[in-house]
Image (cartoon, rainbow, N blue to C red):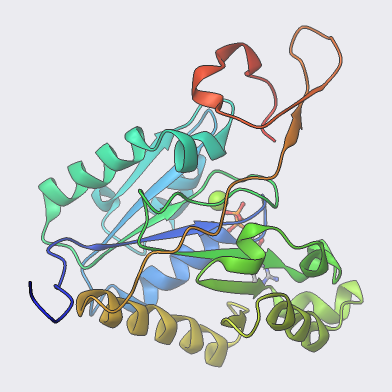
Length: 252
Ligand SMILES: Nc1nc2c(ncn2[C@@H]2O[C@H](COP(=O)(O)OP(=O)(O)O)[C@@H](O)[C@H]2O)c(=O)[nH]1
Ligand SMILES: [Mg+2]
């Protein structure tokens, strides 16, 4: 048995999760812009019915468009990053086969609610994105991504003063909710905050390469509700979506 951790042969897979509109695609564009000169990158997006995020990232001109690929997830975006990750795994493996070796593949989750997280079977590390426009109390609501993702990003800090949110307090409460695990207050207009983010990615990649980084499962989704597509009452359930096609309704 080797007494040192073994360096992995493939690219690190970094998941980016968080509710719709918190700035996941923009954050990925920022990462590509900052890191594409030093790292070999690929991006996989998860959209419900479209390739909207992939098209946004391609049009941003931050990476060779061939290296940005969409996975269409159907009705429940969290299914494809948590319960049945096959489509995403195939997309990452195809990307590595076509362009490898790569250093980093970033996977954007479909916009989802506060409780969706990536399975550690799909990603090596994950960050969870909230934005100040969603309100200062969102961090206090907690959830597996907020509490236990490898990194919590409080995004769009430039909007704090416009929406009456105390960004410092929100960031502090994020740290408290995470028992000291990293939190970055980010705005794409604030270069120092972008450097913090890219620094975290570099550090995590370095630890991944030496085998020191261990993928952590933030935990499953909380029980939640799906509106019934046949007009009956909403019903709670606790998964697994992949085996319940009749539950295909609005994303939750
Ligand atoms: N003010 C501000 N707006 C941002 C920032 N990052 C993203 N946005 C805007 O937030 C909106 C949603 O961003 P997007 O990346 O599409 O969010 P996603 O749904 O989580 O992928 C867009 O209008 C972005 O331009 C930021 O740092 N500051
Ligand atoms: Mg997006």
